Length: 392
Image: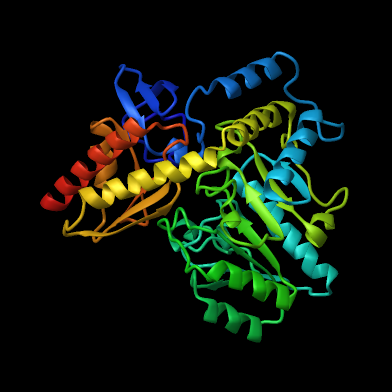
C-alpha cells in the first residue's frame, strides 16, 4: 500500500499500463478482458481514436478558462446532449455526485418557489447517488452512510418498485416536491423495476406537481440499448443526471432539465470552477458524436442479448444461480451467497468484473466489445461461477 494515499480503497493487486478497446494490459504485460469499463465509464473502451484525438487537439489549444466567459465547446455539448435526451437545458459539473447535487438543489428551489419551506424528495431503498453529504443522504445504503451522521434532512425513502408505498407518501406527506430514482439500480444489484413502475411514477408526479428526477449516471450514454434508459418508455423526466461514460474517462457530469425545472436556476444559484471546461466538453462531444454516428445503443442491445443468453445457457440448472438479469450491457448474475471472492478469481484469469450487493456479479462491458470477446466473457465467467459454487 502507498502510505501517501488515504486508505479509502481496497485495491486489487494490479496496475494497468495501457488499454485498447475492450482489452487492458498490466505493468507486467498480462492481458485482461475488461467487462467493467471502469464501472460504466469507458463505454467506448480504451484509447478510442476519436476521443484521443479530441483530447490531444484541445489540450494543445486551450484547457480551461472559466464559466465567467463563454465556452464554445460547452454550448455545443449542451446542444448535443439536450437533443439526444429531448431535454431543454444543461448544467455541467465534474462528476455524477455533482450532477445529482444540482438536481437536489433544483428540487429544493422548486419547492421553495411553491411556498414549501421544508421541501422533501422521495428516494429509493438500495439506491446509490453519490458520496457527498447530500447525495450520500439520498442513497439507500446504510453501509456508505455509517459514520457520517448527521445526514442531510429532506429525503423520504420507499422500496424500489413499490408503487403502493410511493402513493402512500403522496397521500400523507404534503412537503414532497420530487422523486429521485435510477431507471435501473446499478450499485444496488442491477435491479430492474416492474414494467409499469416508471410510467406510473411519471403519472403520479404529474398528478401531484412533483418533479420526476432520473439518475442516469450509470444507465446513460447508450448502455441499456437506448441513448438513455428512460427512452425505453413513452415519457420524459423533468430532470436527468448523466456522468460516468459522458467523457469516457475525462471527468464530467451534467444535470439536464426541461420545462419549468429548466428555468429554475439563475445567476448565482449554482456554479462550478472546472465544470464544463473546454477540455472536458470536447472529450464529451467526441463521445456523443461517436455513440450517435454508430448507433452504439443498438450494439449494446445486441451484445447484451448475446451475453445474457450465453450465460443462461452455460449456467442453466446450476445450483446457487438465482437469476441472470439486465438490459443492454448492464448485466447482473445473482447468486445465493456472497461472492466477492469471484472478483479476485476473475482477475487471476484475466477478466475484470465487479460484485455488488454482496451476491451479484455486475457486468458493464464497453460498447465496443466484439462478439468473440463477448463469447470469451461468457466462457470465462461461467466457468468461474461453476467452480466457485462447487467449492463454497
